[in-house]
Image: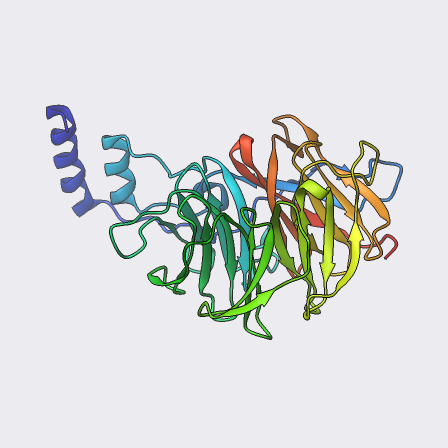
Length: 351
């Protein structure tokens, strides 16, 4: 710290005696008064753009006066996202949604190039960056996150070949499994207390207990499976990336449906990544090569796509992870634009 900074720090400390602390507003998701919609008018809108999150202040999570002042003096930033790759949402809070509507309680984002998992607690207004694994190891390339019913957070690190768990208060809890060749996707079946792990190195999807006891493999054969997601009724969605499809599996591992296929037309897939189901049973698939999100019914029929390549609202640069919460809010990791974009499912359409 320079002499000028030391002097300014002294002035800040003296000023703290006289200055009251301001009260931060309630954290909530960004809200666009006139956001983009898909499809465009005059068609009936099904998807609406709400806003994006790049750093805690975008959702009203602010540092206190003292830490903010010292951060300004020392050059510390607001811990922005670098390369968001996967996102998970937990719980519900009464006024954290767009416009003060009910919204998520906690959002977790795996930041692969930032070597951290960012946890935004909208209920408490706190932001935590998870990096340490309780020993001499730090996260290297976290690429997948999933919550269980107790708000414990599971993290897959593809570079370390490990899946670990953090407690609800952000403390390192335990290692779930190690020596996974390349864990890249996670999903939790809260009802059955099962953890699914996609391993792109061995081209399989593993089934484990929540404490890491092996329970066999799911479905297949796959070719570079990546992102996973649970549906409300217990089906498992698998992005089978180099077979250009999404596979829908029963809890027993039986293939129920396949969605997509190689090609460049609407409904075809080239690099499927994030996958999730909305409250009406539609399946959403992020395609990193097309820079869009495609929507299908649960039989695999193409319905709609939204997004295109670019840096503007509703545009993407190599998007990756995706999740949809119980209110129909859609979170998309816009990786190379260093942000998570938030959309709303407006309802309607064929199922």
